[in-house]
Length: 91
View 1 (cartoon, rainbow, N blue to C red):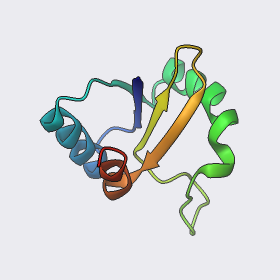
View 2: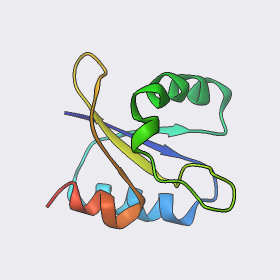
View 3: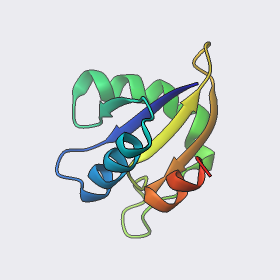
View 4: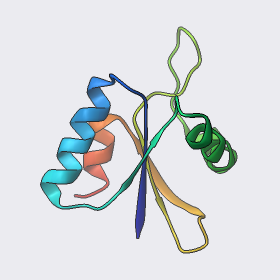
């Protein structure tokens, strides 16, 4: 399986998830949503996961980080947001 982690700079929760994944020896790619090209790629992924994302009540933005598991054809198999949910993906 392929894992993609969507983050933003200076995101403490994002760093916690990176540390968790690294500690488990899980390979993943990091996509910085503040980067124009990375954000453009996420737009395509977003269409597959929009209805499944948890959002911040105050501004309706998706809670970060987001880890998705994709198959060979880049279809999303499952996703997790924030550390506890992402940890549960590997239990």
